[in-house]
Structures are given as C-alpha cells and as structure tokens.
Amino acid sequence: MNRFSVLGMAWLTAVGSIACGDATPPEALGSGGSNVLTGKAGSAGSATAGSAGEGSGGSAGAPGGDAGGAPCSGCVELVVPVDGGVQNTMFNFALPSAVDMSAAVITYRVRALTLGAELHANPFAQDEDYGGFPNSPEPLSADNGFVDEETWVDLSFDLAAIPAAPLLGGSDAGGRQPDPAAFDRSAVKQFGLHVGTGGAFAGDLSVRVLVDSVTFSGVDDSVLPDITFSSDAEGLTINSYGPRPGSAVIHHP
Image (cartoon, rainbow, N blue to C red; front, side, top):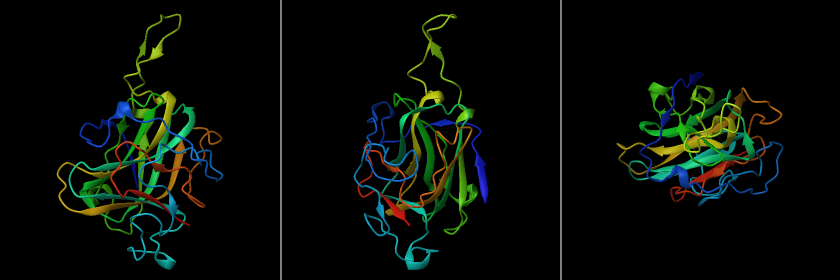
C-alpha cells in the first residue's frame, strides 16, 4: 500500500462549482452511530447517504466486487457524474465545533473505480469561517499509485505543513486574532474529499471512488476518533454548494 505524505499545499483556483468564501455552514442530519462525526454532516446536497444500491451510481457488478456485487464492504462509494472539465462535488465531514488540527495528518484509504490523470480525489479542509480552502491535488492515475481498479491507496493530508494563519490586531500583550482571509488550521470545521475532473478532461462518465477509512494522527482520538464506515456513512455527506447533479454517497455494509 502506497502512502503519500503531502509536503506542500496548493490553493484550489480553478474549481467552477465552489466559491470557498460562500460555503454554507453545515447542518446536523441526526443519523445514529458511534463516531463523534455521525449525524454532524455538511449541508445536504442533491443526494444523501444510502445503503448499497440506493441513490444514483449504484455499484452492482463493479470490478473487484465483494459477495453480492458490492465493490467493497464496510466502506462508502462516492459518485460524481461528469461530462466535461472542472466538474466537481465536495464530500465532507462537518464537526459540531472547531477542532485544533495544527499537528494533524488525515489519511484517506481510497480505491478508484475510474482511473485517469484528469480525474481526482483531493483531500481538503475549511476553518470555522469557511474561508480558506487548502487542498492536496491527487489524480487517480498510476503515477499516484492508482495502478488498477483493485488497488487501495493511502492519501495523506498534512495540515501541519500548512503555515499558521497570521495574527491581526491587538498587541504583543494579547488580543490578536487569526486573519479571517487565511486558513486557520487551529480551528478546522469541516474536511473531506473533493472529487471530479481537471480542466483538460473530455468525456462522459461517473467518477467513482471508494473510501475504506479515514484515520487521524496529531489529534486526540477522544476528540476525533478514526472513521471505519462499519455501520453507516458516519456523517460523510455532500456539501450543498454546487454539487454535480446525481452525485451520491453510498454506504456498503
């Protein structure tokens, strides 16, 4: 299994479906489960999490499927229909309150059922004012470890590598506050995967990405435990800001 540690952050500048500063604050959906994130989902989009076979982009008969035709078990499948370049959907976890992730590394164990250098699953994070949008560009290509539809790849997003937000106002004696125009890694409110196409993509398909787990280091596990999708989608949902029509989160038990 490959592991990619993000050493540098890139700002997303060419995403037509998202205006970072206008993201709608998350809402709790109230679903059950053991994880602290369960039921604390981002604003609902055009599709909601369902069990295997529900929603658009069902996965019966997918390559490498488990018994019953599902592509994996204890996982979620993210589906984004696209027919051109720069078409994307944000799938996010929203925290009930901001968490200090100044030393955090978030690792997504993923598998791509659609492959290509112009298809991507980019880890991202936003702070509590939903302003800055640092992300880790991750093409679903062999160069990035996605050698076939059977291979699981660890995508690691190192928030500690992002510079701290500069402090404004106040004085040396105190009262300074993080610049609201900058991403504040000490007050992360939501994070997830941004799935879709790059600017050079041409075609008509559904980008399909499986997520087996989301694990954390540098954060107290009593505050943010690992996510395994054993019983449900554990709060992973579609952000309402400009998702692609037909996007879906599908839980495979």
